Image: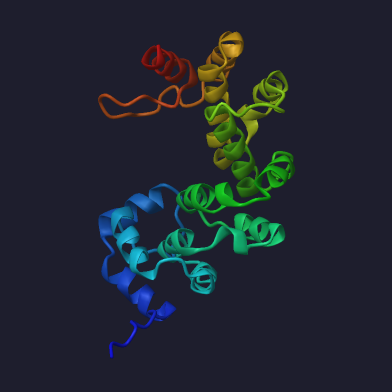
Length: 229
């Protein structure tokens, strides 16, 4: 009779992550705004740690509560989104520690939650940087998926033109993604979206590797429209 493998404890998982840490990666994370509580583990290694854990909602919540960067990324991969109430999802979103965690949480948890659209409307008006980032991320995602029915796109452009220059950096990123998505997928609004991008100039000097498209909206939109032609 074979014995079922036991689930590692939070302490054991943290030790595993710490052993995978790399100083260069830690410095890179810190430069990108990561908290001190991190080991510097590559994203691919984080996925390898999470894979054998499968879906484990209680363990995910325990890992999240550690506040450790890599533990929270593992939590994003093993949590059960539908097991969270809307209030719990809102609280977790606001407790995010940095952009990499926010982006994984938005992609793997928020995007799969049945209350995401109701929360999106709430978050779009929120002053909390992580809630607002999530709200704009959901909006950009809807536009990119050609699911913009019910969205007042001209009004969104009005908001972006007014709010983007002074928004917190964490919000600027997904607000800019929304501006780009409108320009790419809605030809009638493209000229205005590009004009707003030119006027604000956000990410104009963003460094990119050869062959990559910068997030500067005028260049980004032109490149994506060309690819989709």
